Image 1 (cartoon, rainbow, N blue to C red):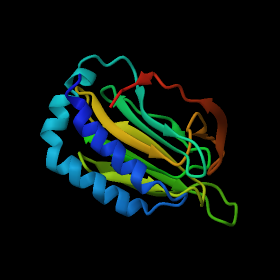
Image 2 (image 1 turned 120 degrees about the horizontal axis):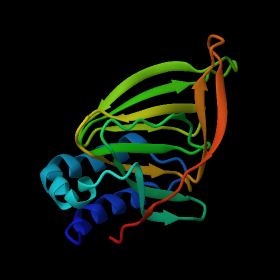
Image 3 (image 1 turned 90 degrees about the vertical axis):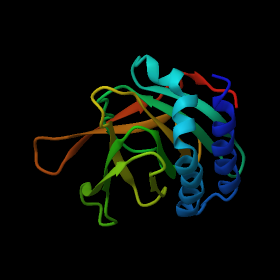
Length: 193
């Protein structure tokens, strides 16, 4: 797995450079990361083949973590075939999620300033180099799913802080309401780059 270091280091370094500001330009971050992923998609997929061999449940692997006035976490996620997260928020953090291998579906909701219930904002399909991003405000949640029934998907996640805790949401039978549950997200290891 030492071959993956070059590509992951480049992606990590781009994320670290863009996120020096507490409110980075997420579109610019997505474009710059996307250039690398589109250019090197085949090599990235080959380099990370070891992570795609054994689907052992969703795996969150740390690439970088920074504290201070502009905190940041950079993670690589390995998605088992057809795996879907529950609908969840990101604990008030901004974030960017980009497919590296495979295809992900992202359903996104926002909560209007009026305090009304969650409203479906849309659905995105992400292939390698495509990104979904969200600001810390207004509140948002989403649900992600690996679209393949047979292959492990890989994605890069950049968050404006340490995403250790979030809330998960389930639709309530009483129209438009959601039940919320606090959740702790574990990191399954770190990749040295």
